[in-house]
View 1 (cartoon, rainbow over the protein chains, first blue to last red):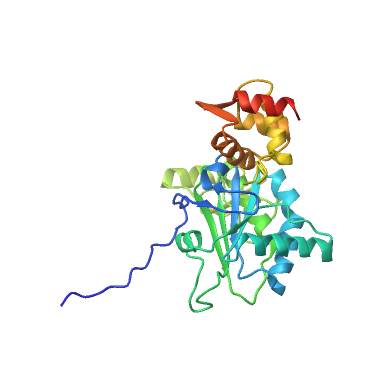
View 2 (view 1 turned 90 degrees about the horizontal axis):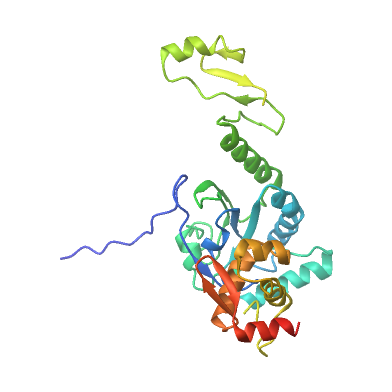
Length: 216
Length: 75
């Protein structure tokens, strides 16, 4: 008897190309390709007209100018309809005076949320959890964050990750724990004994050959 | 439709793209610069305007069709 196996779509991984999509949004139909050349934060929320999501949308709208300075666009998503998204965004603006300036995907078919693994049945079988996919200007996934339904996201951390990724790309360095722009960065560890010996003579601030910091 | 209203008239963003194209064939990036709209909106909008017969794609550039030219001149 043939065994029936449940098909589980493979989830996106860091360093892989972001799954392409074409979606209906509050700013018209959009494709992932439309964002080529820009960084993109694709994020999901469980549902419109819910309290934590509303605080998050206000917070995302507030950091949007800072994101734009860094060449980053925002794209929201839930499995609600475009009409629901429009009504919610208008309500948020009416009640809080905060305009939602970025598009929101209406993923009623769950095509995008399935491709990105945004529905976690252990949390909810119908709603998307709070996902954040940071996609770079070459459309490669650089960071994935998952938050549970009960916990709103931290915008400082999202901005910090963008700064860290862009600093690493521009300078060929890594960033240490709790790094903030302006802090010293970590020099990539040497791959050979010769490089390790030379490393200690280069004037970096070194704990030892494998952990050296420098000012940019 | 984000650029064309159900009554067939261009929306504010659609109108900005049509006006930007009056200067001649432009890439999405050039239309974005001239219109002040984000590039992702322009790429999506130019596809929509082409589907409505108001622009024609020529390689990486878009230009107004005769109908698009007429509409752009009226804005």
